[in-house]
Amino acid sequence: MVLIRRHALVTVSPSAWREVAGDHPLKEVRDWAALRRPLVCRCPAPDEEGAGVALGLPLPPLLGKLRLAFLLPVNALAPFGGSTALSALDVKPDSFWRPDVAKLLQLAARYNIVPEATGSLLWQSVTGLEYLSATSDLDILWRVDPVRHDTTSLLRDLAALTGALTMRLDGEVIFPDDRGVQWRELHDSAKRGGSETVLAKSLRHGVEITTVASLFTRDAAQSREVMAS
Image 1: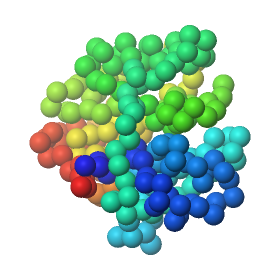
Image 2 (image 1 turned 180 degrees about the vertical axis):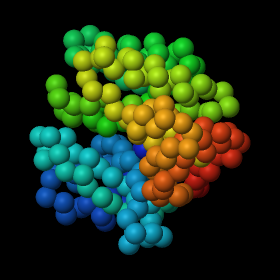
Image 3 (image 1 turned 30 degrees about the vertical axis):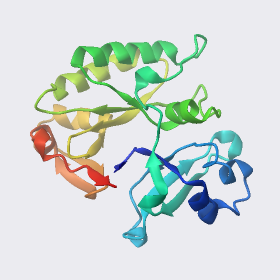
Image 4 (image 1 turned 45 degrees about the vertical axis):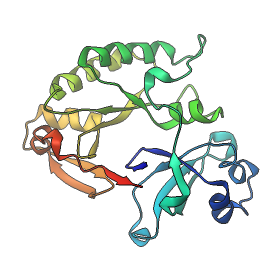
């Protein structure tokens, strides 16, 4: 069973990949599926609705840093076998981002949250290609349940921690119904009160404006994650 939601990683059958990328000018792209490298689920464009699962493939700087878009049938996809958990990344002792990762994991442990890597940090880890540089952001996903987690305190502590990090902290807070909000925007809006609005993204609802209060009070049982078999 394949979980289809924003940021989810999937692999593609080599035969299906040849149909959509077999004539791509870059060998790295043509060989992507054969190497079992993943693609990421993304929000479809308006003209892509119902045409398949919308997937993205961000290339590293040495390959042009392009963001390639594909549409594939769900029966051509399989779950990615690796982990996206920040704690599971292979961070070498001399990696310049290692101290930042350690600080974020310490914070996550206090809230009993398992943060996930995304962006350049994740893609370098799952492909072995060079995505990160000294100017890269540290993109992290924080999946929270307002019933179990003090989201306001988490945001406050994230903001306080940024001064101790060498990399700029980016990423999203993701709620049980799969709505994701950029963490800085959510933090700034939450400080001004629950009636403040933020930009939320999900595969089910697309891009929408919603209030902070509506996110912080959603019942975890009302998860709207889309499952495909």
